[in-house]
Amino acid sequence: MARAIVETPDQVDCDPVSRALFDLSLVLSDEPWRFGAGELEAGRAAGLSDAALLHAVVQSAYFNYLNRVADATGIDFDYESPLPRIPIDRARDPHPRPPPAAWPRPPAVFALADRPQTAERFTAWRQLLFDRDQPLTRRDRRLVARAAALATCDAAGADALATGEPTTPREHALVAYADLLSRAPWRLGAADLAPLRAAGLDDRALLDLITVASFQNTASRLTLAGVALDEGEAGSIA
Amino acid sequence: MPHIRVIDSDEATGELAEAYRAMAERPMPSVYRPPHGGAPGIIRAHSLDPVLLRTTFAMSASLSTDATLSWPARELINAVTSRVNQCLY
Image 1: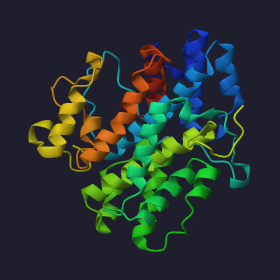
Image 2 (image 1 turned 60 degrees about the horizontal axis):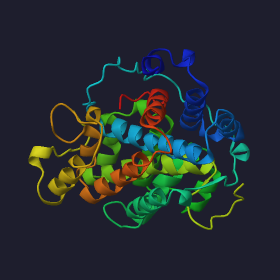
Image 3 (image 1 turned 30 degrees about the vertical axis):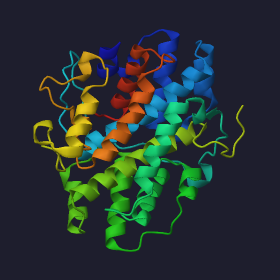
Image 4 (image 1 turned 180 degrees about the vertical axis):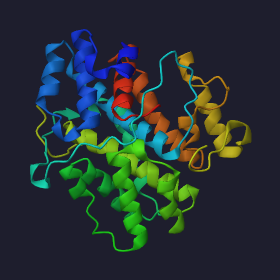
């Protein structure tokens, strides 16, 4: 099946549980604003528990972070694999986004706190990325994360990150990079970092930018999948 | 060649060397260990910030240490996510 995912992803033939996990990951990664009750009901119908569905959602959302960091930093793929390499079409356009008025604000159907260790580590990860002043400022971090939330059509996340619009060429460059990283990470290259280097960012600041934007791609996917990230978060857990 | 500076295992000192050592000691399937013997690229991508490195991959450990989803099921999710994102990783 792994070979089929690489070579002919639209023709994968698999058991109901695998099909449900396949479709859940596909929608959550590719068009997270479309994620909804259908993906969850299909999983339940296949026999997946809500605990397993929450695990699947977090797993895919986290891998969206790793994919973006890998593409943005340009690391070599250094694992041994018997599978053929994924064909990459850098010209592929990202999906058009719906207008902001149509962006979903799903109620919470899961609580990350139901995975206590994951919730604790997610919170620590978020605090480390947002609650420091160097090398990116706190405002920089919120601008970057908000750009990622907007590109993901995460209305609630964008609202929570509101910090005003970018005003300087440096801030516009940060936001433009976060937008590209979120919409079409397969297009990222070294040249995309050049305007940021010209604006004064060093490698350590670029890592900050890449990881904050990538983190928000995880956080926004969790929100769009109906995962309450914090205890007591608004929403009806059903 | 990476787009930002990456510190390899054999150049690492201090906090980064300790982070690499801790990551290498985690139980994991052998296929996750690259043949060059050093830290995998996705870990080295975080090498300019050893605290971030450890915090980020503590999250992944929390997803791989319970049996709610089997390893093949998690690999299926990872493969589909990478395929959709057109990412080799």
